[in-house]
Every structure is written in C-alpha cells, then in structure tokens.
Image (tube, rainbow over all chains, first blue to last red; front, side):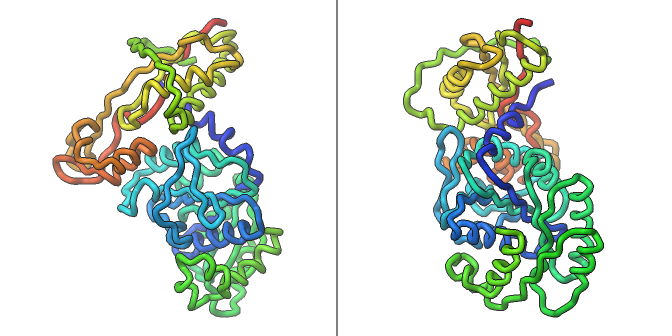
Length: 243
Length: 158
C-alpha cells in the first residue's frame, strides 16, 4: 500500500482563485473550446486576472484558437503557465508537441492530478476550464478536486447533442454542482426546442450564439475573434450572468 | 497509518543554491502536506520518518528534491525531525497491452530526444505520446511500476 501525495496540495494551488468555471458539454463538436477561449479573452479584456486550463487531453484545441506558438511554462517551484493575450494558459500540448495522445482512463486522472499539483496559477479572478465532452474521468476529477467549480454548459440546436447534454446536466444537478446555465451555439433557426428542454431540467437557458460563417477565419487570431458576430452574441449572454 | 518495511537509501544533500526553482519543489510540497495530514489524522506528536518512492519515469533530481523536502518540513505541525525523509528509487516497468512485452524506461531513454524526455519528467504519462512498445510498436502499453512520487510509509511518535 502506498499513499498518493498529490491530492494534498491541490487545494493550496487553487486557494487564490476566486472563481473556477468549467465550460462543458455532453457532446463533442458543439463549440466548448471556442466558448471557453472566448470567455477567457472576454474576461482578460475587462482586466480580470484570468487562467485557462485545457483539459481536453485527447484533442486539445484552445491553443489553436488562441494562436499559441513557441511558448512553454516557466519552471519555478512548479510550473507557471505562460501569458497568452493576457491569459495564463495551461495545456497538455506543451508536453505532447501536437502528437496523438493515446491515454487510458487511469492515465487521464494521473495527468489531471499532476497538472493540478504542479501548476502555480498564483492569484486569479477566474480560472476557465475547457472540458472534454461527456461525463468521464475529466469531469469527475474536476468535480472531485476543484470543489468550488461552476459549470457553463454548451450545446448545439441538435436533438442528438441535447440528448447527451441532458445527461450531463442531470448528473451535475444530482451532485449539486452550480450550473450557470446553458448556451445554445451555432443556431440557424428560431427553434425553441433547446430552451424548452433546458427549462424542463430546471436549468437556466442563457441564449443563442448564431452560426457565424466567418468565425473560422478568426481562429488563431484573438483580436479578430473578439470582433466576430459570435463573440457579440456571447458577450450578450455573459452579461446575463454578470461576466 | 501506512506501515511498510523499507530498505533505506541515504543521500548526502549538498546545499543547492541554484536549481531550486525546479518543479521538484511542487512535488516535495505535496509529500510534506500529505505526511502532515496523515500524522494529524493519526494524532502523532512528531514525524520521525517518511519513506518516499521516486518512480524512475519522473526523473526527479534527488538532491534538489531532498533539499526541498527538508526546507518545507520546517515549522510543520506536528514537527518533522531533521533528515526524516528516506528516498527510494523505484525502477520502472512498462508493459505492452498488445503483445505483453515488458521493458524499462532506461532501455528506451536513448531513443528519446531531450524535449521528449523533459516532457516525461513533467508529466510521466506523455511517455505514451513519445514512445512505443519496442517489440510490436504499439502505443497501448501501461506504466506497471515506477511512475512518480509516492509515500510508502510514515513513522512517528504518539
């Protein structure tokens, strides 16, 4: 029998962070990373001290959205994330060099523990987490180790996406985790299907981000991203939850 | 309370002045905090010995690690006596899930470049990203032994 020491230090690493917001979804491809990165940029532009942790370990993508190149954490009593456009940004990609990441569940939990134990965030107003899809190890570990985390949930208008998102919301509610609300991303019609489904679960529906055909051109260019129509929709939504 | 029979390994810590900023410090902090938490649970008045396994994969700088452990041990409650930490290296065993081959990190180290090796030092699981089974080439292997730092025993006085 041995004792795992890393869990003991996590609370200390996170103690000077005011709010932890996990951007999550039950389904992949709904725009979580874009919402998480845009939220972090939005808060950084308001002069908040912001961190962004990409926990999508199989398919990290926040670094692509933020246009991160040739950056690496500083080693100082742990690792200090580099500042990217004013955001302290941590990702597995610093260590994987964009190679495929064939991790099993136990490895995922170990990586999350290691990142949480050695990352020195310092004082932050917000730590945004870009979550992978679903309710697997990453979601359970965030709930377990980041006790103060709040969830911002993203879906698309699809019934398929909402099916999985409904399950995520149900488990978050069962575990009594704070859910800030649900954002409906990439909408192309005025359908109220998602709004009704979200209300049926007694969760706050925050609004729509309309499909923006020019959004792709701003990937990797945060200054352009902040001027997109999608970002305007997101800013309006974030005002509702005072972000 | 954990209790283990251990073989002692002693290190002579030189007082490192440079290199203290390394990430070993963060891991040492987790060891000290975990040992103190456990000692408080067990109502120990003093911690006399903490045995720590250091997995080969994490490539810890032992002198720095020991120095950090001793520095961080000061002013703890319950107190940790001087030189309480015993470090024991755990050799790695990697096992392929596809063909059953087993090997050690040492065996494949020379095939890794400095950046890959450094990345494994920070996050041992990225070994699955940078290495393959030497027999069948599969990335589907596991770290059976020697991953990172673990506490194997804590001794103290009630």
